[in-house]
Length: 431
Ligand SMILES: *[C@@H]1O[C@H](CO)[C@@H](O)[C@H](O)[C@H]1NC(C)=O
Ligand SMILES: *[C@@H]1O[C@H](CO)[C@@H](O)[C@H](O)[C@H]1NC(C)=O
Ligand SMILES: *[C@@H]1O[C@H](CO)[C@@H](O)[C@H](O)[C@H]1NC(C)=O
Ligand SMILES: *[C@@H]1O[C@H](CO)[C@@H](O)[C@H](O)[C@H]1NC(C)=O
Ligand SMILES: *[C@@H]1O[C@H](CO)[C@@H](O)[C@H](O)[C@H]1NC(C)=O
Ligand SMILES: *[C@@H]1O[C@H](CO)[C@@H](O)[C@H](O)[C@H]1NC(C)=O
Ligand SMILES: *[C@@H]1O[C@H](CO)[C@@H](O)[C@H](O)[C@H]1NC(C)=O
Ligand SMILES: *[C@@H]1O[C@H](CO)[C@@H](O)[C@H](O)[C@H]1NC(C)=O
Image (cartoon, rainbow, N blue to C red; front, side, top):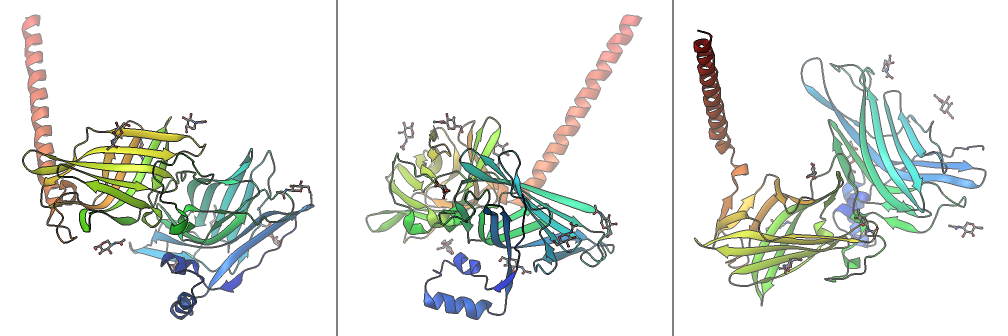
C-alpha cells in the first residue's frame, strides 16, 4: 500500500478567536471587527492529507500552538511558544486499519514533536491520545535550560466520533498539563476515511454547538445521537462561570454564578463534564421556604439545586437531583436530599471562589468554581452582602495548621507517656 503525502501550511486568519467572542462568523460587522483586531496576527494551519490506494485515508487541518515553561540556569522560568510550523514534517503519520491505530505525527524542527493516535471500534473512531515531546537540550529552542533532556507530556482524550464523520471544532480548546499549555482551534479531521473521500457529514464538538440548537425541553426522554458525555482528558480545564437566575413574576428571586464540573465515576472510571453556560438553559421556582434552580442542556437532562430555609434564619443547599444522558443512550440519575452546603444567613449571599466538592452520591460529585448564590431575599436583582466560605479565607489556615501541629504534639506526648508506662510495667515484671 503506497502512502503518499500532501502537506502544506497556509496563512489564514484565526477566526476561531471570533467564535470565542460569540460573534457569528456570518455577521459582516463581526468579520470586519475580527479582521481589524487580528489583521496583524496571522497564523498557520497545519494540514495533512494521507492517501492510500483508495484515496484519502486520513485527513486533518487544524491550528495549534503550545507554550512550554522551563527553568533556566539563572533560576528563572522562561516560557517559549511553539506555533509557526516552519520546519514541520509529518513523518511517522499513518492511516491505520482494523488492527492498528492511525496516527498523526508532527515534528517541529528537531526539538519538539507532537502526535495523536486514533483507534477504530465498531462504527466509531476515537481521538485517543496526544503526546507532546520536547528536548530541552536543544539550545536554540530552549536557551539556557537548567535541566537538559527529553520531556514527554501525555494527555488522553478519548473523543468518540462516528465512522465516516469529519470531526469539527472551531472553538478554542485548551489543555494544561504540567508546564505545558496546548491550544487547538479550527480543527477538522477524519481518521479511517472509508471511501477515499473526506466526509461531508460533520460531527461537531460540544464547544461549537450554537445555543439555539439546544431545545429547552425539560424531562425529555429522547437522547439525541450526539449526546456523548465529554470524555476525561488528564488535564481538565476549569469550567466557564455562568450566571443563572430565576424570576418570580417580574422580579429576580434567585441568583447563582458558578462554574460547574460534573464528575461521574463508574467502575473507577471518571467522566468529567464541564457545564458550558452558553449552551445551558435554566429555570426554577421560588417559594418562601424553598427555592429551586434547574439547569439542562444536550447532555444534562436536568440538574436541580434545591435550597431550603432552616431555623436561625439561614438557608442552605439541601438537595441535588441530576439526570444525565450517557454515551450509550442510557440515562444516569441520582439524588441526595440530605445535603448541607452553602449555608448562610437569609438576606445575604454565599460565596466561594475556591473549588468546592459537593458529593451527591458515591458515584457523582459536583465541583464548583467561583461560586456565588443567593436563593432567597434577592432585592433589585442584585446579590446582597456575601458570606464567604472558609476555603477562601487563608487566615483560617494558620490556626488550623497550628492546631494540627499542637494536636500532633499532644499525641506524640501521650504515646511517649504510654510507652514509658508500659516499659516501666515491664520493668516491674522482670523484677
Ligand atoms: C496561541 O493560540 C492562542 C489561541 O488562539 C492565542 O490566543 C495565542 O496568542 C497564541 N500564541 C501565540 C504566541 O501565537
Ligand atoms: C521525513 O520526510 C522527508 C520528506 O518526505 C524526508 O526527506 C526525510 O528523510 C524524512 N525524515 C525521516 C527522519 O524519516
Ligand atoms: C536531545 O537533544 C540532544 C542535543 O540536541 C541530543 O544529543 C539528544 O539525543 C536528544 N535527546 C533525545 C531523546 O532526542
Ligand atoms: C462507500 O462506497 C460503497 C460502494 O461504493 C457504498 O456502498 C458506501 O455507501 C460508501 N460509504 C460511504 C460512507 O460513502
Ligand atoms: C455575571 O454577572 C455579573 C454581574 O452582573 C457580571 O459582572 C459578569 O460579567 C457576568 N458573567 C457572565 C459570564 O455573564
Ligand atoms: C472524580 O471523582 C473520583 C471519585 O470520587 C475522584 O477520584 C476524581 O479525582 C474526581 N475527579 C475530579 C476531576 O474531580
Ligand atoms: C428529586 O428526586 C427524588 C428521587 O428521584 C424525588 O423524590 C424528588 O421529588 C426530587 N426532588 C425534586 C425537587 O424534584
Ligand atoms: C450504558 O452504560 C452504563 C455504564 O456506562 C451502564 O451502566 C448501562 O447499563 C449501559 N446501558 C445500556 C443500555 O447499555
